[in-house]
View 1 (cartoon, rainbow, N blue to C red):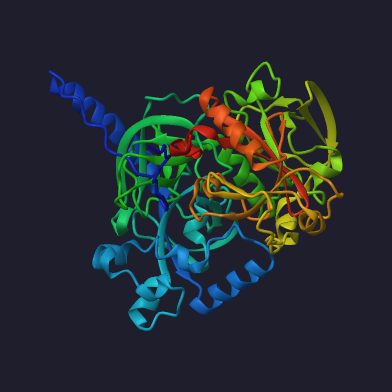
View 2 (view 1 turned 180 degrees about the vertical axis):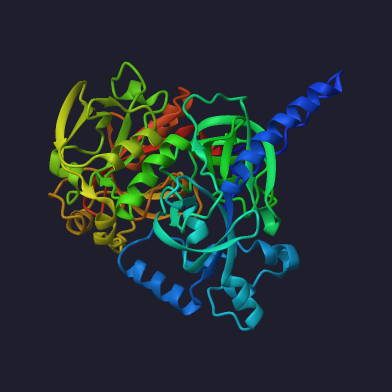
Amino acid sequence: MKRTLTATLFAVMLASTTALVPAVVMAETPAVASMDTSLADVYSRVSLGVVRINVIKKSYAEIVEEEREKKENGEDFYLPPSERGDRDDDDNDRQKGEKDKDKDSEKGEEPKYDWQKKKRNAATGTGFFINHDGLIVTNEHVVRDAARFVVVLKDGRRIRAELVGKDFLTDLAVLRVTMPEGVKPLSWGNSHAIRIGDPVFALGYPYGFDQSLTTGVISGKQRELSKGKYNPYLQTDTAVNKGNSGGPLLSMDGKVVGVNSALYTRSGGNEGLAFSIPAEHAQGIIDLLVKDGEIKRGWFGIGYTEVKPGIGDLLGMSENEGMLILRTPDDEPAYAAGIRAGDVIVAVNGETVTSRLHFRMQAASVKGETTVTVWRDGEYHSFTLIPDDMDEAKSRRRQAEHEKFAPTDKDDGRKKVIGLDLVPANAKAWEKLDLPQGTKGLVVDRMDKMGQGDQAGFEKGDFITRINDVDMITPDDFEKVLKQALENDAPYALVYFKRDGQDRTKVVDTLSMVDLEDY
């Protein structure tokens, strides 16, 4: 029997999903009527401040050229055109349906027919006024690749808008229009104070319909998504669909507690899992976008993971806390500060690291000299780190081909463990990896594609030196440590290795990655 870990979740940017909270049938109808009237009064007060945003996209050739330039500059965090599809084109979704999705666009090719080009080059979303200067908040993915914008008010008035700034990593953007008469901006609420179970409602323009109101509750807080990794999302079951993106999530007094941004769905529609950017977090990003037009983030230049239960014991920590550093390339700020793979970052500028999301936001927000506190060899140490700018650092990084080598000696001591062909260090390995003669370790010579070693994240050419506190000299050492971990129900093992000349640390989930049939 093999133990495998499978999870299939589909993140769809452009809105949040939610199931409507069913109204509780009361014995006296006046109570229901009173509640409806109250929300109706709030709606009439705020609805004119929520607008539809019509986006005219750039030409396909322009988009492809821009994406090519981004790729050449190392900006690998942008989605290529072939992955973006027509996510905001709600009018055409209503008319054509998902079955008529442009096949050529999925291949990244120029559409053949005029109606396909028109479909690609139009999009819609939602936004809302935040002040009397005509500033409108929406999502970055709504305005992406836009040539121009037209803001449509609930009463039908249309206004040309200009882009003030946008940020891919938080999925926020700001537009500016000449402030129309009679429109009252929405007020920010307190997303910190809002509780799980508190009722909320959303306003937006789903699937090309006129403005719609849906209700629900807060389902969770501090959610982390694979998209928008710099947001501590609010989760709600309020029904939000394509076209609602960028619209407000409001408390029952009409205050904005979140900006609707994403949904998890298997069907492509509302399934009750919607995510909004919290108001306080959004305000900080918006202020910087209005000031500078972009967001500058700090860059430590490390790979890391949370110290999960059980890992702290391996490291001699009294608590499972902080971020375990998996790698510190020698040309990055963390290495220059003296931080190394295997250290655990427990605080940044004196502020305790509470989660992976929290640390990511801490590192992104720092500027200038930064004090980083780490756990190493049973003690706490402080280092002074000067972060790089994230965009500049990513632009400098180029993905290099991993040096591959294959020892050919038949009697080289190799053995296959969890799908990895492991070979004791030899002269060829020492030469290729620029290591001193006699360095002990195991070379990953070959590996089974989609095998358990592959799933654990090993790569051909990795040089494994130690697992937990056991030095790796022969493949039997590797096998013995994993077998012992399995027998002791130890959920994780720490693997120390070299890749591309850099020291790295990896957390291996022994309970799911080890082939139980082999042991």
